[in-house]
Image (cartoon, rainbow, N blue to C red; front, side, top):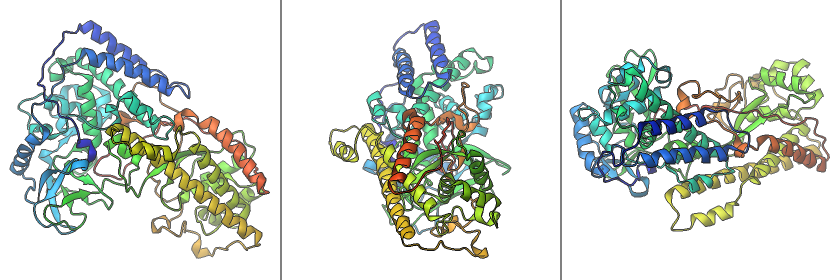
Amino acid sequence: MGKKSRVKTQKSGSGASAVVSPKEMMNLISELLQKCSSAAPPAGKEWEEYIQIRGLVEKIRKKQKGMSVVFDGSREDYFPDLMSWAQENGASCDSFTVADFGAEGYGLRATRDIKAEELFLWIPRKMQMTVESAQNSVLGPLYSQDRILQAMGNVTLALHLLCERANPASPWLPYIHSLPQEYDTPLYYQQEDVQLLLGTQAVQDVLSQYKNTARQYAYFYKLVQTHPAASKLPLKDSFTFDDYRWAVSSVMTRQNQIPTEDGSRVTLALIPLWDMCNHTNGLITTGYNLEDDRCECVALQDYKENEQIYIFYGTRSNAEFVIHNGFFFQDNAHDRVKIKLGVSKSERLYAMKAEVLARAGIPASCIFALHCSEPPISAQLLAFLRVFCMTEEELKDYLLGDRVINKIFTLGNSEFPVSWDNEIKLWTFLETRAALLLKTYKTTSEEDQSMLEKPDLSLHSRLAIQLRLAEKQILEKASASGRAKRLHFQKKQEEGALLPRYEESDIALLENTDSDAKLPIILRKLEEVEEGQEIPMEEHSPFLNGEKAMYGTNVEANGGKVQEETQKVSQDVDSALASIGISNQHGQREVGNLSASRTEDNPKENSE
């Protein structure tokens, strides 16, 4: 599956090479759990906390050296067994084989011509590792008594994978043997590789991923050693951080939602063979056939014999690909950068703005996205910015004026500005905000391009720099787009152009450039990365609530400098507006802490 499969295969066997005092190890584990479970550090101190947590983890890893269970031989040695096992269990194996595609890693190669939309791959349920199969395994007794496992299916899958890996008679051993023994997720980065991401929008997701993984490892290490229901688990004798990191990465890069056997709800699963497919742009072509009780995949396009077979992972950003899949997709049409925006509660017009936003179905403090495509903002963000920049009179018009309900429906429609002044303000804000965010990076785009040309750059450093550069390019496009729009509407204003009038039949339309957006804004599905999601307070419990906590993303953009940046952006926007003869009547933007879980439309890898 992409570059995550490009790993160094360990050649050593299993067994401990050092004797470690159980008390000494438990003390280190307790220290790690306490450190990872403490309240979030103050803004700007996240890197310092990461260094401390990583230091404890490295101490533990050093004492556990040689204790992890690994398989002899290379990964590709086990592919014939994987194909034989799949065929014996009723999977389709006559249209493809597993092959090495160089920089893309291992994938599926067509062994015959395959037509677009042709069903070429199916995997029956009995081959899949699921939360239900975990409950029916040696892990079942512990699962029935531990609320964390019951609430977090991905944690259950990770431990299920480890237990089955240690079982010589496991029915899933041909699949487990075929998995990478290492991954390219940030959990495997060296400290200097992670440091390359400092100042990026993605860095806090990376730091939180490491902290959450370390916290969960410490919790389950203690649980396995002390809980009566864990007495028969193979992990009791050997459960290293490297083991858990491997299991977490295996699940994070591969897990998907499938329906339960009765179809009443969804569960999480690892789907052998199908998870070997690499990603390309396109549409989701995988579904679940309840009648035949199997996962089915049709061809995304025509494939000739010996061509690589691709599937579409979903509309993921490159930050999601790098953090949760371990690769960077160069031609990602869905790339985007998170941006936090909020109306300050101390602003005089806060109540009016919050009410207009509420009527449009948008919270007063949100996380949005700037997109790599044009326009860089969604209908929701356009609506938010219009309200954000409204004067008191304009707010009254949208609260008390004629046809107020109809007007609310046009807030996200690019064809119907509130006023020329309002349009100039919002695009000036976007231009200035994006330019300010660009200043927080420690390198320029040109410097990043130069670094990427170095032939001796490690894979993980390259991924970090590619992600950093992609963020800057999106911000540069957004700032340029904001400037172009500002100049366009300034010209409209100078020419004395009349504002477009909407007809009664137009009120339910949003942006006219996207058929999917031609819905009332209050009915439109929120975008990925929680665009339009209210910003809640950060969790301080040892585990985040819900299933997505395993790979939680406690986001504080640009290393916790949001509050400082929003103050400065307010001043810069005021200055910019003043320079073009417009007064800005809104105050400082207030941005709270965020503890967010990503939403997925991707049936391939629903990772958090």
